[in-house]
Image 1 (cartoon, helix red, strand yellow):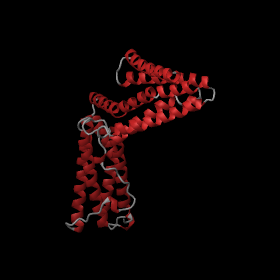
Image 2 (cartoon, helix red, strand yellow):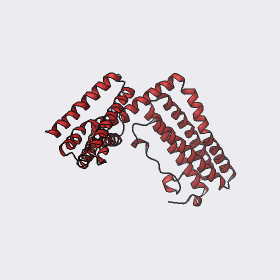
Image 3 (cartoon, one colour):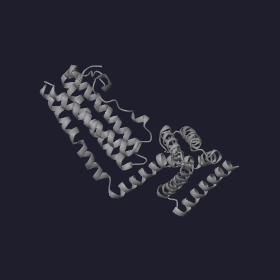
Image 4 (tube, one colour):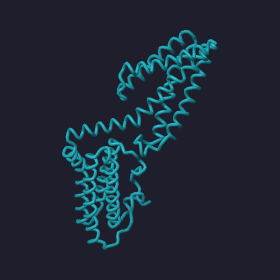
Length: 318
């Protein structure tokens, strides 16, 4: 890798051409990746791609005037100081906020490059173009806002908000809810069976931790290996697996931690109270995000939890 200050004017222009070409293709990938769920935002990035294409055309035209037809391949990874970007094709499906943040970071980095390049360039025409491009990159954020106001009418924003909510439910809420339900309900039986059988807070705590962590690992791997999300839109499988595994463990640990209290009866009472809170939280999430009627959600969750709880107590007392 070369230091930026060691680049010649010819290499600076070649690097600028390479950067604009890369940004153009990234914006094209953004537009394509958002087209299905966020068509209006896809149009914004398609317009920004055209602007980057025009920048590249101006740079190539000036390069030909100054240095001829051959343009050496100087890339961002060949020069120290550039931030390494995650390839867009590795991030599927694309999240709207993630894309906008990455686009903003790209514009800031490119603008700084042009400002530094213009400051150390001696040729007047090259400096003029680099200064102009820096100014245009600086105004890209304003241009993006103009495009947003132009393309994202109120009804379109509502459609995109609904699409974003749908993706959030698919990629986060569903695996998280499945994990929370499994962790909160399935671990009730072993925890309370151990508690009633041994009458020991510490023994119940050890059983609860083992059941919670084991269930979290199992559910996490099961979700991660279920599908890759390419057809279902459910997001990256390992991200879903991490969410489901973490929520499964959390659901089990919630009513396990009270058994750290040495007084067995007090620990048992607090654990029972925590179970009620967990089931209420699951009911709220089902109502809020899955649009399940509150009474129906409470009945389903409460009945399932009660059956598992009673099973654990009966087995522990047998």
